[in-house]
Structures are given as C-alpha cells and as structure tokens.
Image 1: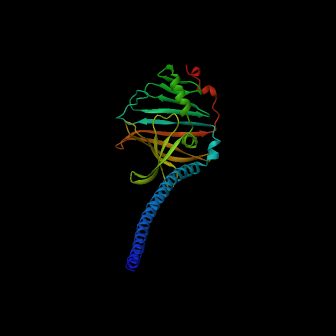
Image 2 (image 1 turned 90 degrees about the vertical axis):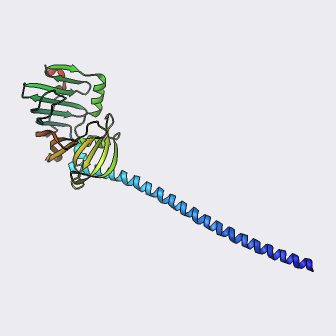
Image 3 (image 1 turned 120 degrees about the horizontal axis):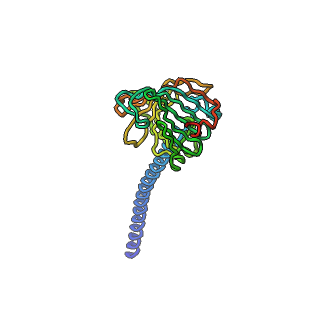
Length: 284
C-alpha cells in the first residue's frame, strides 16, 4: 500500500513534470516561432523594400526617358528623322584656348551634318586666319583636315566613331545596349532635377544628365569620372517640324566659370545631304 502511494505520488509527480515540461516547451516554441516570424517578416519586408526600390528606380528611369521622348515630340516622330543640319557660331571665352583647333579665343563659324545611320561631319571656319578645320566620319572611315592637312585616322578611331555617331540624345536613350541608371533628385544652381547616369556602347565614360521635372527636357549634362569636370547647359529650345531641340549650349568649368558658347542660327531636319559631303576627296 505504501508502495501504491509511492507509485501514485511518482505518477502524479511525473505527470506534473511532464505537464510543466510541455508547458515550458510550448512557451519556448512560442517564443521561437515569434522570433522566427519576426525575422521572417523582416526578411520579407527587406526583400519587398529592396524589390520596390529596384523596381521604383527602374520605373523612374524609364519614366524620365518616356517623359523626355514625349517632350521632344515622341519616339515615333524622332524615329522618322533621317538627317540633321546645324549652322551657327562657337565662341571661346578670352581666357581659354581651344585644344581641338589650337587657336586663341574668337568666334568660329560651325557647320554640322548628321545622316543616318552613322555619318557625321563637323567643320569650323576660323575668321582669324581664314582656315577650316574638319572632322568627318563617312560611315567607314574617320578623317580630319586641320589647317589644310588631311589625315586618315586609325581603324580604332573609325570603329569608335561608327559606334558613337548619332543625331541626338534620343538615339542614345532608345538604343537597347545603353545602360541607364536613376541617380535620384539633385539640386543644381538652386533648382532640383531628376538625374540619370547614361553610358552608351562605345563610350569611354558615362554621362550624368539633369532632366527638368516639369518640362521633361535636359537642362544640363556632365561627364562622370572625368579628370576635369565641366557642365554643358542646354538652352533656347525650339520646335522644328514637331521636334523640340535646343539652339544653344553653354559650357562651364567646375566653378561655374563660362568657357564657351555654341549658338545655332539654323537647324534643319530631314534635309537632303548627299553622301559626297562626307568624303575627304571633296575637300582638297
């Protein structure tokens, strides 16, 4: 009988211990699952936030490009542009000298011709000594003529021009190989802009472009990671046959000192430009 009591007590004690152990396990499991749930939720939220951030960035970049294309007249209308002729003046500030043409400051008369898919012509007339400087790519060969000296450039330079020649910024943004990254909003000269990092195939460096959030048009661009920082401002936008283009470019150094001004007095789209205009043989 004593044994029964002992057995009973042992049984009761064992049952209580089991109940207590079970309760403690349940508590621990509950705390564990709460912790696990909390961690899982944090991970889910982190993944969601990251996904949303990446998606938002991609959508923002895409929207900026879309707004820009709409602002200039639409991607379809731009796609129908086959050529562009520009005539105007290029002025260096008195304290600077041109590395490209190796002349002191003065007004240059400039003519630029672009023809799809990749023909490019740039000439400048120096009024100081009445000499021409020409840079041209005829679709296969890049050649120059500086102060009467004709020179056929290297195969590498020709290949580079074949990749980078374009009619306008829209060509770059529409090209599938172009890498576009949204950098966020940034103030420039006290005004807030959307900024994109743009790198086209063939470009050695990336460009940072500041887009006006109201008009959708580029306000300024600068080269990223360049040893010498310069800002190119785009001004005087006008409508040319349904396409909006700028007629003026101002270049400033990193301290916002004006370095040069390019002003176009005439821009024509889809004008007839003969292929011979890009051949060196015609510029003796």
